[in-house]
Image 1 (spheres, rainbow, N blue to C red):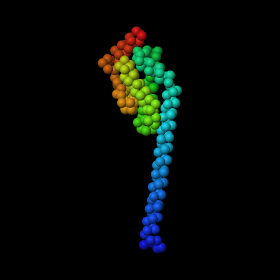
Image 2: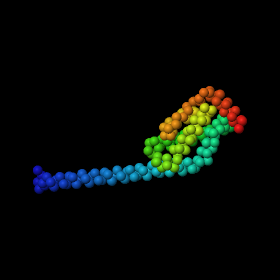
Image 3: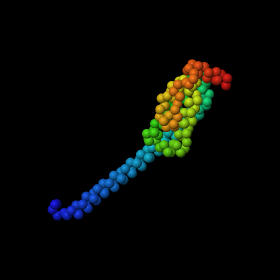
Image 4: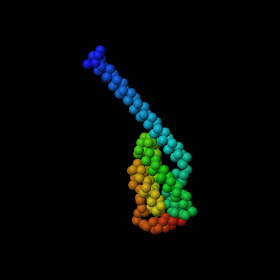
Length: 174
């Protein structure tokens, strides 16, 4: 037994120290959680800012995916690269959402996930005609997982050359 201290006083002191430690831990965890939420929101806002800055190019990409023959014109290689670049970016954004780096709820509430799903659906429609697009899309694993769409990895039912010729014919008719 400790000199001058009874067991009750010792236990009261020990319980008080433990309670103070637990309260400190709870406060620290609450602060970290709030900071994490704030960071996720900041990342989501940065994503939306980039989306707005790229809005014209994203609109162009949507139009090109609706007319895949235009992506096969060798004079438009830059346009195909722009479409692929947007897909690459959407794949990165999907990874940020899946790994809880970006505020998923915020992005989904304003329709950003649905926007990415429409893009993936449009890629699926164009990929059979544009083999470089199909090749790029098969690497967008995070996008596929996040929006729940399996992207065509190879042209379906046609060889790449046959699909390219078919799409070129559609572009000439337009």
